[in-house]
Length: 466
Image (cartoon, rainbow, N blue to C red):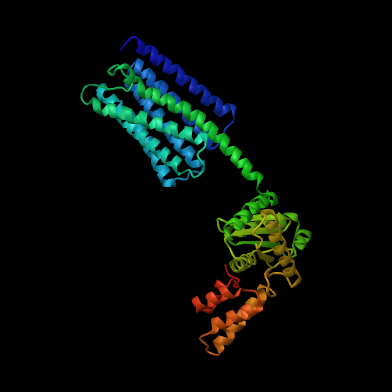
């Protein structure tokens, strides 16, 4: 060993001790918890592992090898667990298998260290330890690559840290295997020239430093994103609030005007909701609103925008959706909400009235959105005046609502079945159109494609199932 190497390893020892102090400070000074705590714990363990490797280079011994490999492996397992807990989903059985494998590997390393041949023991410990740690780091990289959010500075630094750690472990493993029978090899031992001996430790130091900074930034970025997301949501229902709805509507209206694709709006109001609050209390009313919001979430497509407009009124924006498709969606929502039980003081089930309109103005986005909502809102109040628990279209020729359409369809099906007519679905479709609750093209399509009466009713959205 050249005279400069002990000094170099002592310097690395001090640097790893510094990263250990930083990790401990972040862990307890910032009072981190959950996956953020696992990230800082992982870097504390990685720093301890680097210190053990540096001490092993100064005074080689199997004990340092076992300790270093156990700490490095534990650090990477914590890192993967933290990434998984942060939302980068990994199958639970994969995670359990990795943890079990890590524990078994540490036990095996300790067992190997008890053999008589210290040279063979140290070589086996290092080879096995670096191989397993490299596999765990590889899994961490896979989790990072699954992240679908935009790659922020924190994400990039974490990725660099994992790459540096993977290269370090791979280099250690390759040199250990290349040592063959030439005696014990240490990635920081006296058998290798200076730079090659220090390369793995330098890479590990880079990995720890990049990881500490990267995960700190990543945590801050995620906290900021969560705060921004919460600021756009209604605190009771978890849907968008009115301001966020306006922002989304402006974007969708501008896109619809640019592309010429349809944009529909559903304005939904809970029928007789004041009675729920007056007779069962506001907490019971809040629970009803939460159930309705969850129903909207489940009924929406990923491209739709659902919001609580205010009080018991909700709004649903459906891009690339014509008025006819919106009617079917509205009927499905109405039927599902009809399955929500009201408090015992009221009895029965919830119901909603829904007004539907399709954007027509392809000019200014603000004016288009205001006109769209106003048309849907007027249709909603028509539904209220005509008996509630129904869907009304703002378009020309809109009928008296979904209930009339359902009755017409049911009567047509019954009459057709009694007469033995093979055209019962088509006749029912025609009557439903005349009632005005189901658009002609949707009813005709359903009649042409579906011959079972029950199935046709589901396709037209007039079933109370679902």
